[in-house]
Structures are given as C-alpha cells and as structure tokens.
Image (cartoon, rainbow, N blue to C red; front, top):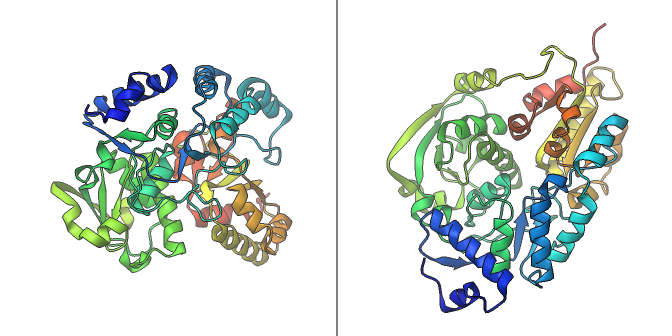
Length: 425
C-alpha cells in the first residue's frame, strides 16, 4: 500500500505506539481487500455499531481503554447503535436478572468509555443516525468510517456518501486515524451494479419484503432496481426515504448489500442512469408471486408455531417521527373499528431518543400510550439475544429482526390486524 509521508510517519510511531497500531490495523485491513492507498474520512461524524456492554467483549473494552489512555479520543465525534436495555420494555424478573447480571454487566462502564472516545450525546444511540432529529447526516460524496449495516447502506444509496461495510472497532479506528483504505464501495468501479432487478408487482411492494428478496438473491453485490417509479416517484421525499430506510435494512441483513441504486431516484442513478450497470449484470425479476414465495419460505422457529404472540416489535431499524404518527393513527382506527380501547398484544415501537422527544410534543404520544403501546429507544435485537426472550413468541414487521433472532415476520398490515384483534375464546 502506498502511504503518504504523514501516514507513513504515523505507522512508524511518530504519534505514539498506540496510533501506530491503529494505522497498522487499517493497512492490514486494506491490503486484505487489495487497497492501494488510504483516503481521508470527510464526514463530520462517525458511527459505531458496538453499543452493548457484554462481558465477553472484554478484549474490545481493553483495546478502547488503551486508545483512551493514549489520548487518541479527540478525533472524529460519533453516534452509536441503540442501547440494549430499557426498563419500560416488557420483561420478567428472570429476564431482567439475565440481562443485568449475566449479559450486559459492562454497560455502564462501556457507555463511559464511549463518552471518553467522543460520542456526540448520551441521546445519540440509534441505528438511524442520519435522521434530521439526530443530525449525523453525511453529504453526497463524503467518505465515512461507519459500521451498522442498515446505516451504511442508507448512507451509500440514499445520501450518495461512500462507505464500506466495516466491522465494529475498525470503524472507530478509521475515525481516529482520519483515513480509511480505498476499496470496494469507496471506488467508482465498486459502486457499479452487477444485478438488474426488475420489479413487476401489481401493488406497492412491502419495503421489508422486497428488500429481503433482493438481499437473498444478490448477497453482497450491488443491485440496480427498476420499476419502482410508480410508487416512489423520482424525488427523495420524506415518505420515500422512509421506505428506502426499511428496504435497505432488509437488503443488508437478509443479504450483505452495502449499496443499491433505484432507477430515476437515488443520487447516482439519477446522474448516471444505466451507465451504472456493469457489463454482464445478472437479471432478477420480482412480481407479487415471487414476494409471496419468499415470505412463505421464511422458517418459523417457535417451539409451538401456533402459539399466541406474546410480544410485538415495530421499528428495526428505528422508526421515523412520521412512522410513529402514522402507526398511532392506524392503531386508533383499527381499535375503533373493532370496538376495542387497547391493543391485544404487548407492543413496542422503537425509535431514537431525539425522535421520541419530538413525538412526545405531539398529541399522538398520549393517544399511543392510551392504546397501550410502549415507545422505546431500545435495540430489539439486543433484547432478543437474551436466551429466555428467544423462547417467546415474538412478532415483528422487521426482516432484520426476523433474520437475526427467533422473531416471526409479518407484513405491517398483518401486524396491525394481530395487535388489534381480540383473541377468540
């Protein structure tokens, strides 16, 4: 790898042994993927995926402490993924014992480390750091050092920034050093589409379901999606961006997509059109029957497939303010139609703390509370990692949560129906 004189000096120890190790790690990472040089990180903020204090992660915390002790924590500020615990989320005494005494025993210590490393604010724990209320929104062309698959794919695809799917720790090292190895999605060639996806549905596809189908087909490659203009239009409105948030999270978790292009809509697709499609790109046609086939093939890993749902999570990735409002209205209408006052399945809507604070300023917050829905900043995935929670019959509209846990996927319409339907005796 060809380093600049400044980078070489850092590798040689000019800024201390710890910084030399950080740079060496980034060099080894880049050489693994054939990078020939480093490029500067140009975004204002970083984002780290590690937000949880598990005892098994002690080597990570020890490494971070060395970075702190070496005085290297004054570089790029950052946000982090959602916290794992919230006392407002339904759990038993035994669940709580496992959470606090066995699983997340290092949470307070680690959050203190994050503060010393440069987290922007104690409220800024979310997988949707790019929302306006949070403020970590990169500009088009910015080079990032992020982890968190759903945030990376959104930044690349919707915002036109450039970031590889980094792992935890490496993303923080890039922020500290101020540069990252140039390969993959940081290059023009690496951003070309090797799949053409032709959407031929009769109705607007469920974002999480369409993303899932594409992710499982193209895996880590870049898709160029056609046929969505009739539903998404040609401008990145708030509604469209919300759709793409959930769509992208599914492509990134059900596959390993770090970038997608939507014809006539996403920044690079509007600028370059089909010039973004690489020679020899494969074709995947998706219609309503294909989406139904994909959904019907999801495994149900509940011990009793016919069990009554015990808990519902909506918001993985975290919900936007408008989603919270829309869901509140829809829950209210469904309950009224069925003559009910409260939901029939314990339900948690998850969103970032800054978004929740804005939501609480609206009359919808009191309505939603009246309906029995809990709003939380939690990461549902971290909740479901509890072995006791894995055994619960949890339902979700998130394909990401379905992929990583025992939660069972339903479309948003089905979720609304289930949580507002009284069980027949």
